[in-house]
Image 1 (spheres, rainbow, N blue to C red):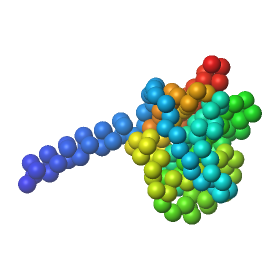
Image 2 (cartoon, rainbow, N blue to C red):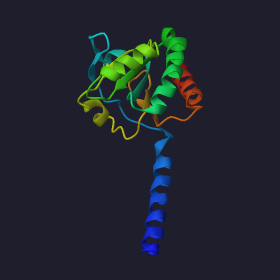
Image 3 (cartoon, rainbow, N blue to C red):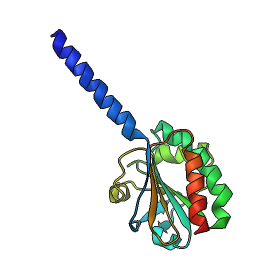
Length: 168
């Protein structure tokens, strides 16, 4: 029995390390950003392809996600700083019931467009595996950067990547 507990303890420790290591990562990616249309907080339809010509950050989030809540004010600052220079940020909430998400957006005074993926069709299209997940798309509609999870300091990477793509 003692041997089994020790074995399962090691296995659990290994699984936890793997989860931690994949919970927050950043990578360069390629390919056209899959187009989508979602309802916004204000009830209008927002279509990604209509943003062509802008650098677009797509941030997938949920109200139950602590790191999402932590990064949202930082994303809002980034949006406010660069929105007049050809940058937009689309916050895509992935919850079936958007009640808590709407409350969180109101509490945090989010200025960027918030969209609702209540059927998770867009998060499946983008193969979202972690909360939050952020995809940065260039002016031509190509995916360029992917961030899975959030760690303090990612906002500095976001800003560098956005500025790089805006200069292209």
